[in-house]
Image (cartoon, rainbow, N blue to C red; front, side, top):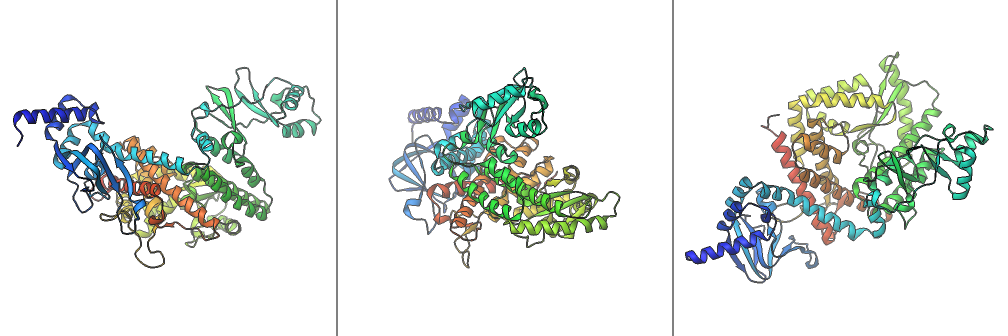
Length: 639
């Protein structure tokens, strides 16, 4: 038993130790003293197991000296895949398990002689309650780990580090050139001389304040001047094209790449406070590879038939693989894939409408499901519908005019590599070719009578956006839904219950829970038991908070402030979702390259160390998100 003098000395040593580590170095002296008085010391010999899943997580450990190994568990884990992390002096564990009141999922083993300070679980709970600094540290810890792991992951897997850096960098930090410019009151003759001198095909047209107002291209010269026998002394403002695509300097390379895909341009202007300060091109972003985002986008929009579009669908796969190899994150990658698929769908509809010989009512072709969320991967079927305005026609007549067109469009999409939906969720199905009033009635029936089938339909059709036609019809339906849904408490209880039925495939006594037998033995489904967990939760958060986004990441971040979710927690959920989606994309691309049918299943034991580590943390984040959902909206919660 320590005497008073020894105890005082031990407390001082503990106090000095706490002052040297985060987050305690930022705490008040009163809180530090409170913690120091309650710390106990433990010693471990090399190889000793300090904590394992068979033990309850009842204490917080601080590594005071030595090194602690964090090891994976599970029968099939080979030795080189066991090490998940090394905890050095000043680090603590298992914060996540204590904070979430769950067992640990790893083995913590002494690597050499180790000395630890420990704080028992009751005192841990008290400290969380009395110290905001410590509470925020616990909440942010998982987010920080996931972000760090994500950065390591991209560094490890991006084969072209320079290109990955350009994609992640802010546009204002890149050494971007200033594009060739002319003033709007300059003559066409002056512009031609500049085009000839610069050997470029376009000039940016600016006003007296250096604000870009248009672009003048060789195409403009031919179409608007020479073919019309116009005067070369005309000012540029009379013949320039007004369309410009610009981003601010704090936008990053990912956003520029996405804009190139969406608008089919090879150059993005950088504009600060209305003034042109530079431009970024595809060559700037993809210096080591001919990615040709804008060219592919333009070729899709100009394709003259289904056969041409079939070939371009294959190029989307190739492009996705190139972007993955350059370190493009999952969020922008899915947006680019979805954007190019949008262009392809839009062009198919254009071609079929042009060939259709019957008058058509005003309509909007909507994408639902993953395409509706801008989250398409390389393996997806069709999910779509039609919203129409019958105007002077009766509803059945209007529907009869649209359904044959929808059949042609769905079949053309099938020919281009987007299989017909086995569940019939397509515009050619009369159930999903509805007037605006009928869609409202359909949604109302699901909200008022949330039976299992209604809940299933809601998970598909509440993620919609317009691809072609009158987008105002889609916007009106979205506005109506965002106003109606938050008032339906019974629907939300059932919606939440359905979202919580499927749980992350991680367990108490091994890291991953996989299928035990059958054709899918030893694998887990990254879509059903990974990405979908985030998608379902984000949909609920957005409907309850009134955030009118269909994209999962935007729903989570947009709902955070309204629902008082910490930014760090929301960011961790988004990062976890994007990592799982990136694993899906990689797996699908590998299978396509091998000539196999793509799918969403992986064997965790075939993953490398880093993938296993980050996937496990991502699935833990899914569980945290579900727990938050249950507390906020589950059975017994008051809205």
